[in-house]
Amino acid sequence: MATDLSGRSGEMGGIALSRRVLLGIALLVVLIAAGYVLVPGFASYTNIRSMLLLAAFLGLASIGQTLCALLGSIDMSIPYVIGSANIILAGLFNWGVPPILACLIVLIGGIVIGVINGVLSFRLQGQALIMTLGVGFAVVGASQILTSIGSVYAGNVLGEVPEWLRDVSSIAGTTFGLPIPSIVLIWIAIAVIIIAIMAKTPFGRGFYAVGGNRRAAARILISEFRTWTIAYAISGAMSAITGMTLLGFSGGGFVGVGDPYLFTTLAAVVIGGTSLLGGWGGYGSTIVGTLVLIILTSLLVGLGLSYAMQQAVFGLLIVPMVALYARTPNLRDQI
Image (cartoon, rainbow, N blue to C red; front, side):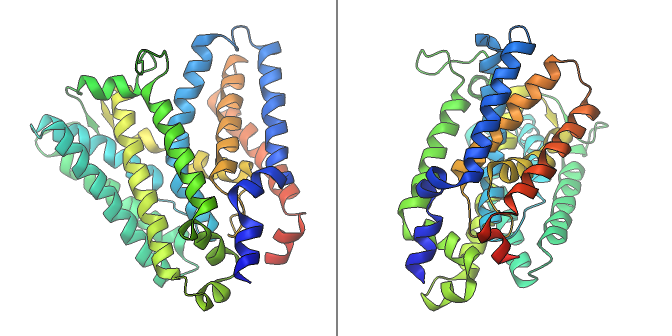
């Protein structure tokens, strides 16, 4: 049974064989072609660089959501942890905390929040959506109270951002002389590591085992509680990192900076083909979904559509994608 779980759900094999991922890739190609034809300058170096930068932010934020989805769960606290990390880091800078120490404090805070999410949602399984949403509300409220002490600007923290943090997340930034923002290369490196771990190690295959068949996973001594907690801890850490890098991008703290990621992290997972019921998909699939969303957004903006219209298009895209995925035998069997 264990061999079947790991063999069927391995990341590399899933990307190569899954028709759902192939569908996402086909959609990606169609969007690129449409953008090239319909939007002047769509394929320009500046626009490509901008899309890669935005994809890096979304890609980092979607790592945790992917791991939770592989277990058949969901993390609704992601946007709130991102916003909290953003303003807390700005506040720490203003309070004179050394930049590296400030980043470490925020990262540890994200991990702690993730562990809390993991423990609570595991103990109250079936309530992960509401539980993580509640934790997210509590965290973002506390962060606004903390950063607004002595200030009239609750939720907005202005101040100096270290130059190195700006360089990491700036669209004009370079890496070792290459005209590529550092955050993009960081995302690529993390993505390679995540995909390799999920495909080649017992730890990674454990996620597929727990998500695919918890009873079988327990029989081969895979700890569901440990796997669940680690998934949420990683989600909290990646949300904190996303919030910190977005501070470098914007230059000022804003608690609502994470709001778009409530929808887009889920959409990237679903469009990429990872099952929200667990046991199938992976981060390679989410990368495809991430690129689809970013390119589609760039296309819609280029066509002059409003934000509300963009949301409508995203919704109309997700519904048929989910309907097609639900027709695959393995997903029907889980349902």
